[in-house]
Length: 435
Ligand code: IMP
Image 1 (tube, helix red, strand yellow):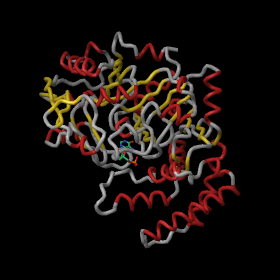
Image 2 (tube, helix red, strand yellow):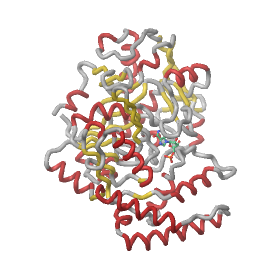
Image 3 (spheres, rainbow, N blue to C red):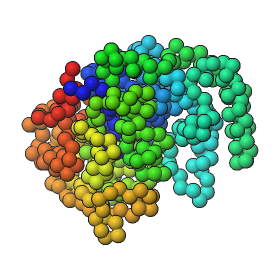
Image 4 (cartoon, rainbow, N blue to C red):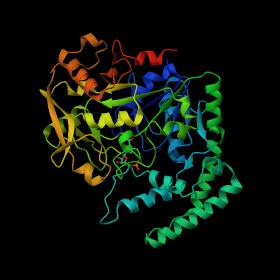
């Protein structure tokens, strides 16, 4: 049994973590997000209802205490909108959501600055979600950011806000952005948000550490995926936070020793939204087929996702960074119609096989993927729940991946519903979850 577990994406995000967290959450008392903001989009389907959660940890849907940790950047307008939508659908949120007083606050001018940076001629656009995430983290690291606790402290907020507004006005003028910003109106709006959020804001590190001491179980929920981690991902085509498992203790305010196991979520093929290197991208009609069959369009932005084949060196790399105890494989059924399934088994660079992930954009872009082609199973697996019922070739595919990655695949998702799940016999994942 592992008391506290991190669950996170093993690829570039959109691995289907929403469903997995929803599946694991009943074993835990508290679900915590530790990084990112409303750039994340977790789609959870429960019976005929679909929820897209951007900031609120998906554990809220099964009645758990949900925590937005200090590692997040929070747009109050987006958060309040999400809370209202959930409450309108009958989910109780305000009584069960806690927001860290150390989380940073996103303002409308963060989005504006992001648009300018992304549009600068001659600079590579990251293809961000345009939510102001990066500029808010920039202010955090530059030590001029405004945190939830500051927002709630009226006097202090005015001073800090006016100083920040002055800085942003200088930038606006320097970049010759035509539209003036009504800083006073934004301040008034945020003073109103502060009152709405106040009852949910607290010292969540204290709350979590006390809960751990009282024997409660905590599930740390990652967003975005390891390859978008600011340190370990395909820099600079990454998000601005520590999406890897190491980000969990920092972004939640618990000691690293409070994390007992790490579960990775990997799609049975690969997708990426936004720009950046993607060695196993399928630019042919099979890539189109993956997009169509897997409905691969961004949950937050609606952008079509780039699609490609499972990448073993990438999984070996993210396993090294995160120390996965087990993997959950999602969307296996999307591969059902394919005659053949290519799998990237190695990387070559300038004709030589390499066994490390290049650090530079140039190196990453120059990777030549080496493929092995596995036979498809060409029979429906959607909704299967028993491992024995999977076609032999689907089991061969899973065994092949498991063996090459060197980490067990403990569970397979065969559809969006909670019940459409196969637990693999003899794997340690169910034991990690036992109470
Ligand atoms: P940002 O997080 O908006 O700064 O975007 C940086 C990069 O991360 C872009 O390539 C986005 O498409 C990507 N990204 C951010 N959030 C997600 C997510 O939840 N899923 C997939 N990609 C994401």
